[in-house]
Length: 251
Image (cartoon, rainbow, N blue to C red; front, side):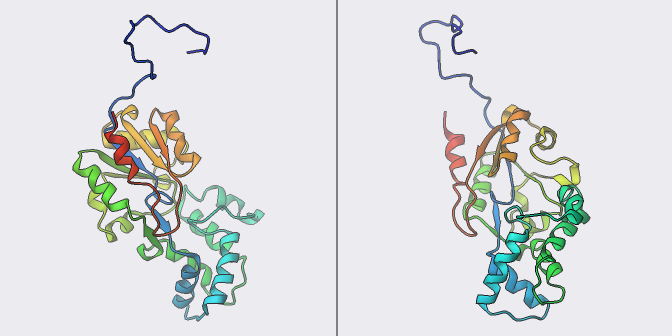
């Protein structure tokens, strides 16, 4: 309604708080930065180096981790620069498994660490549960939603299967569907990925809440869902995930 438009006639007791949404029957969660965070960078490097038979002291691991994160880490910030020979893989990284692996091993290979096989070992850490840390509120929030009869999907821009991670954490039974970009051929913020999640859960978009930590997650609004954007937190630190339960209890 334009700012200057007159309200429709509805009587003196009409609710002027704006249109109400249908009750939330499903919550769609982003994975990285919302339900879990990648392990601390120096630990990431130490673990990968050990897998290659290399030994690093903490100071060298920290310095190397800083360079590798700047170059581009799966689950980390965007790289400072993507060289031309990796540009195509980078563009397709969340649509194809080979592109995801090739992009991130290629970026890690730009850093001369002096350890044979390190780039591949670093990438392997993102594929295993030990390379991730669930946020403290993840399990209790998912369990509370299950107890309340609210259906749950994980909607992630990712180039590998994250289901084994949920299995290892004992969370698989709390998630009704995983909608992964490389499997469905669509990446957030494309509305189609959110529609796919709602379809799998058997709810209309107007009955779903998308919870994430980036503008891409907020793209769910274009699909008809509500959206809640939380701040990404360091591994093991609360990120406000439990506030969802208060929000769903609100009138």
